[in-house]
Image (cartoon, rainbow, N blue to C red; front, side, top):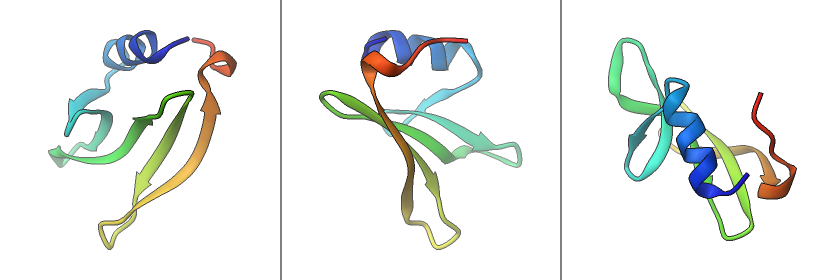
Length: 69
């Protein structure tokens, strides 16, 4: 997959674009992202927002290692 394919997949599966990142939100606060995908040149990172407001990377993979379910 590449960045565009991954973005298309995320948006088709309930993610939404917030601050230029495909993101998941809290049901009680749909305008606040709690999980996001951050695209780099050759890889994508999955980040989770900590309660203090800082983003923490929890996983990352090269685009060529990502396959849709």
